[in-house]
Each structure stands twice: as C-alpha cells, then as structure tokens.
Image: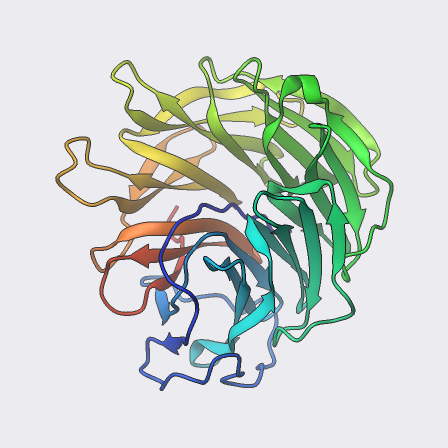
Length: 388
C-alpha cells in the first residue's frame, strides 16, 4: 500500500535532468537508461538523500512508488504536464526516463499512483479548472491507451491510492460534494461514484489512503473546521460513514495517513496560534476515529504538513519558517511514535527553500520526495526517512 501527499511551488519549465553522480544531461524527452529489473525489496540506502537535477515550475507536484523505483510529475507555467522516472539497480537510484511531456492544459491539481510499474496520473484541466484527465503510462512514461478526460470532476488533494490491484480515485464534483470511485490501471471507471461528503459541508483537502481492509477518504469540513473520515472495503462498500475527527481548534489543511501495524490513523494539520503564526500539529485516532493520542504540537512556525506511516508510527514533514523573515524557509521532518512522542529529524538540503514535497510509502519505507528552490546543485531529493 502506498500513500502520498503533495505541496506546490517553484520556477521554470522542464528542460533536462541529471543524476547527482554527474552523468551528462540527456535530450528533453529521451530515456537515459533502460529500466532495471528489481523487486520492491530493494530500498533506498539510509543516511543521505539521492539527488537529481530537474528544472520545473512546481505548479503541481506528485510522486508515486512503483515496483522498481519512483515516478515524479509536475506542471509548468504553460500547463504542460511533465514526468521523470527513476529505477533502483545495484548502484542505487538512476534515471529511467527524463523530462517527458505527458499532457497539456494541466493545472495544479495532480496526483500519481502505480500498480506494479504502470503509472496512473491525474491532472486537472484548464485555468480555471474544468475537470480532470486520468493518464496511464509504463515505467518509461510511454502512454498506455487514451487519456480519460472527465468534465466537472476535480482531483482531490491526494486523489489516488492503491490497495493491491484496486485504485481508488477521490474527487470533488462540480456540485461541491466529495466523491470516491474505483478506476482501473488505464484510468477508466471500475465502479460507480460514491458521494461521501455533501456540498453543504464545503469539503476541501479531499484525500484517499489505502487501509488494511480497503480505503479511507478524508476531507476538511469547511463549516466546523474539523476533519471527516469515512472508511470502505476494497470494493468501496461503506464500512463506516464520515466520522468527525476533532483537533480541538480550526484544523487548517488536514491530511492523514493509515498505519496497518497500529490499525490507526494519524492526522496532520496546521494551527494558527494567538499571534497568527502557523504551527504544525498532529493527532492519532483508531479505526473508529476514537482519539488515541490527543492533538499535540509537532513544530512551531511550520506549515503545510504531510504525513505517512512506517512500521513504528508516522513520519511528518513540513515547511519551517523564520517568523522574523531573516532566514529562508527550510524543509523539516519528525517521527511520531504510537504514543505521540515526537523525534525531530534533520532534512539535508543545500541551503535553499522547499518548493514542493511529499511523503510516500514504498514497500514499508517512507521517502521524502521534495524539490528545492534557490539552493545549489541537484534540486530533487529522494530522502529515506530512517531511524524512527
């Protein structure tokens, strides 16, 4: 099972990409190395991130784990959807496909998932948005079939999640409700639409994650400032309808993750303090949404937290800022154990600021995939979260 969470930003259109080893840039759109054989048991080496150079706007950002590596997707200022694919071999993570234009007329609402080595990518259409297109690609980012264009449905903050061979797709409809359905590996509907959050709740930050028994859909309730989470089996039959998760205050931009080890969810959210500064908070609930660990502060002066589960708890990553404005923003992370104990972990950077970031689970290893703005050297980081 894999889940991902994304944040946005950055500055130019894609040109070329180079591994940090110094391999020369390849022409735009060309594969740089054949896909290497491997299994999900190959993991990134702990201790330092692997870096690649990409040039991109970060107008939309998504990453997905596949059997033998990762895909990264982004939207430039002209609405072009671009992709990069990376494979694990005996030397580590290497480039499989570099700067591939995958679509056009795309906006910031994007997401990615994979079954085996086949990607499904959701990309919002138009500006202002008119809908979403689902694309299917192989590991080299060659298209499979025709894109599935969908008018009047808008990809969620985390629109895709995989559980075995099932893909759940979360959207907000033109009418304003939060919906979920199954799609196949080619991006075509594989179930009817299940309306989860009604428009009167003003759902936002709609996100889907895989669970032990199927899927969960979560969203921010715009009326109450709380979060709602509903659970489903693998066929999207309702296990539990939307249930309130109360953070004790207005929960800004909530996202969540599920731990199959604990059979619990952790919710990450932002809180405005009394000085109007932003702090990153979290809480843990069980599968019935009963509070296991009450809401707690993870980091002050921090925003846009994302979250993923590992075998012992959860990883959370966020943008930390200097309230005086004297220092640049920095990427930061912490591990949260089952009791809610927070252990900060330094994120390696070259001194730049975070532009986009996600935490994704690949075969039980949580990886921070993020793009740096204003630093030195390769700006795309794959940083395995180890030591929790």
